[in-house]
Length: 224
Image (cartoon, rainbow, N blue to C red):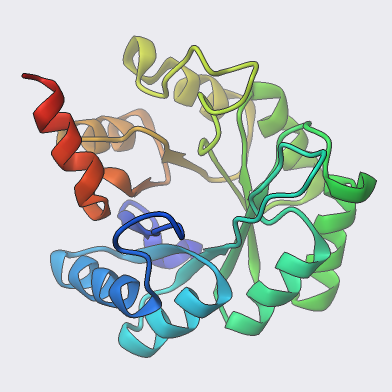
């Protein structure tokens, strides 16, 4: 998948159960619209959505499963169960929370990586990181690429945005690892996407600015 998306846009097509567009059919059409707009890849949540999307488009898919577990803040592909579901979906890449936060049932990140590599060696792995330390550790664990997905969304980074100080966090990650780095998180405009690529991002994932009309509408309304 990495060869396909190099220097190009990945569009995240997701809608959670409490959102108006929650539907595998709707997400498949979102993916089709993204493809027709020029996207090179799709990021999607849940086995059902991924299967439906792959029936609609021939773009490679970064798959995740968001699921809450009691006693753990980790919700992106948190256990072996989610890995199994994603392998069964035939997605080309699996993304998982690669922070140092405690995982359900005491599972370690290394265990998840090793399990995925053993079960599906042909599927690439993306590390969703929040900190520079996460990125460095992900490189050591054998991930194929790093995404800045969780920077700004964890307790220790919640005061920050990816675009702060001209994407300084992205620059720091790029300087610290040797595997591809994908920009993700609050990339809200074409100009921001372009800047991420100029800085050296391998690719970028854009979701809310393209596929979440409720959030887009709210941004317009809030300026009043």
